Image (cartoon, rainbow, N blue to C red; front, side):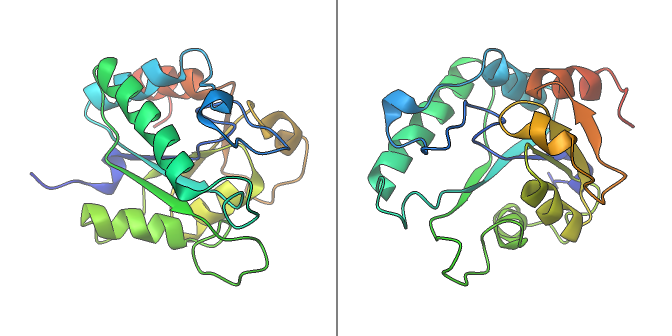
Amino acid sequence: MPIYPQQLVILDRDGVINQDSDAYIKSLDEWIPYPDSIDAIARLSQSGYIVAIATNQSGIARGYYDEAVLTEMHARLTTLVETAGGSIAHIAYCPHGPDDNCTCRKPLPGLLHDIQRVLGLSSLSGSWMVGDSLRDLQAGHACGCRLVLVKTGKGAQTAQKDLGLNDALICTNLKDFADKLLAGRLG
């Protein structure tokens, strides 16, 4: 069965699904999901949306943790979502630092293109990009995604700025976004 871009919800991780930290999420013990975020992902999945994650993880390049620790965090996330009755189609991450000149680090759209390739989509236009920072929204904008800023993580601060992306919707958190999308209130 083909996947259509309108069925795809791309989520940033830190600050959207789980608590964020300026000191980085460096261990499985520090990875703490927000209340209701796991259920929101499961509900989206159960309703026919394909959920993918695009996350910058420069803590790897900075030496704060390694890819094995990141794999543990993503395994926990996947298990929690599956236990709640949902699924995550793909997790794309950038292990590079801001000065590494990679093509995947948001605000560049490389992570989203990875998701597009893995899911076999010809376009991401019309997909949803949910993030808590301007760089999340810029990556989504570059791919023609519908943009949602959540006020968790860095989102409340981001909402105070002139984003230059007037079409971005603002939601309280991931649960609020899922509630509105599933109720048909986001178009």
